[in-house]
Length: 77
Image (tube, rainbow, N blue to C red; front, side, top):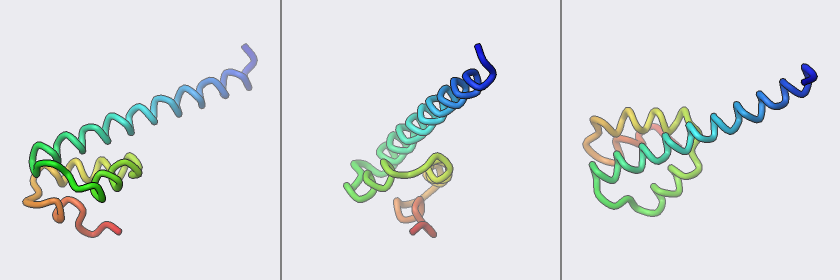
């Protein structure tokens, strides 16, 4: 395989892996927040659906100890 083609394949594989990680983290946040706070309002669901991995990771950590959904999303636009 040509070096250039190998780099392209790795980039595509990395992208798929990252998308998988992001989807898994999204599911984890949804599960955690639903278990802690009950059914989530649609605006919260929409926010989680469009979030990037770093933000999902932050929300997951906050969700562990937050007293409310507002605490999870504090300081976020």
